Structure formats: C-alpha cells, structure tokens
Length: 128
View 1 (cartoon, rainbow, N blue to C red):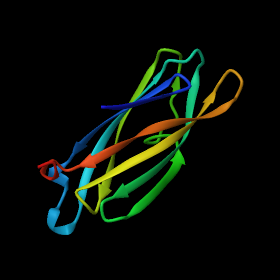
View 2 (cartoon, rainbow, N blue to C red):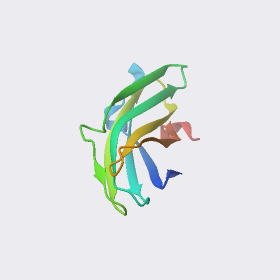
View 3 (cartoon, rainbow, N blue to C red):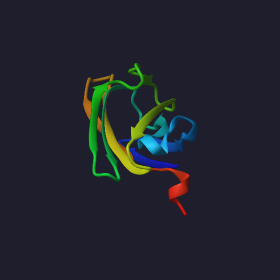
C-alpha cells in the first residue's frame, strides 16, 4: 500500500490487476485501485475535485479532472475515513498514476490541495 499525508489528510492506495476484464491480444489491461482518505486534521473537510494523470508504458498520458470521486463529494469529520474503489484501463501491462484532490475546510471555506501518491499499475506477469 502506498501512502502520503498532506495537511493531516492521509491518502492510501492499493491496486489490483483485473485479468478477467483484460485482453492481452487487444492491448487492454484493467486495474482497480482502492483509495482510503483519512482526516487526521483538526477540521471538518470536504473533497470537492480530483485531478489524475495516468501514464502507461506505451507513452500514453491521460488526464482526468472532475468533481468529487465516484459521484460523491464526501465530508469527513476529524478522525473519519472515506474509502472508494475505481478503475483504470491501460493499453500496456504496466503504468502509473498520480494526482491530487482539492479539498475545503468547512469552518472557513479555505481550499487546499491534497497529494495522491504516485502508484504503479503492473500486471503480475510483468513482475517476472
């Protein structure tokens, strides 16, 4: 599991290759990732936006921006966690992702950026 902390917000990522949805002959490799966001700050926060950069071994770079995560803009009180699962399709059996969340402290409306740690997406057969 990969983890980073920004302003008391801990973001952890665990990835899984999905062979049942991948097709080697069609250059389609599917991965899922589970994100856990922990509010270890003293403030109630809300996740407003996400921004991802997705890189695959073929040199393809994709950028994904949008509101919230998987249709939600979760509010986390101090000590609370939010977890979600999402996915990514690559045209190569390995790549990586990194990104950031735009969050807001609800007490004063201050927006801040939380880093999502860079993580690898690797089909197990490429590990040998």
